[in-house]
Length: 114
Image 1 (tube, rainbow, N blue to C red):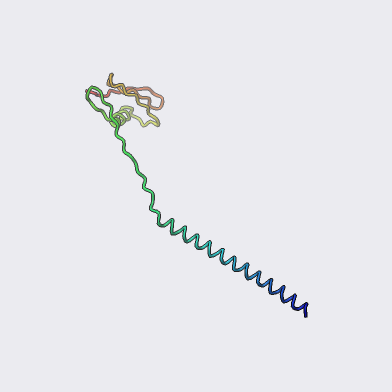
Image 2: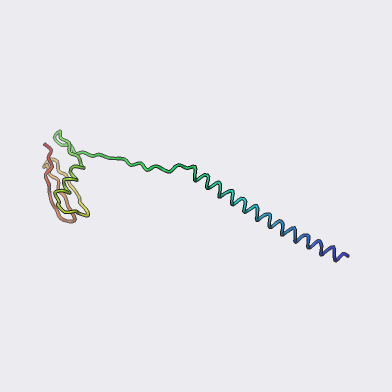
């Protein structure tokens, strides 16, 4: 009879361990589901970040006359005639000139500070 009791006790312990393991698994799954739901709610609540761009206008002033850098750039591109991958511009207001290098070729253009 003692043998039956021991076997029954072992079976009961094994069943209890299996039940406890299943319960732990269910708790872990529930927590994972809750975390996932919380993350989804948090992500849904955050507004999309707005990208702000700052528009910069730059002028060169000489002798009381202002010339927009955008205007100079536009005129340099037009004076170059062909599209260039890279243009570097050097403005010399005292000479009323813009010197530029377009794809390695040096050129110049008049800029009117009058």
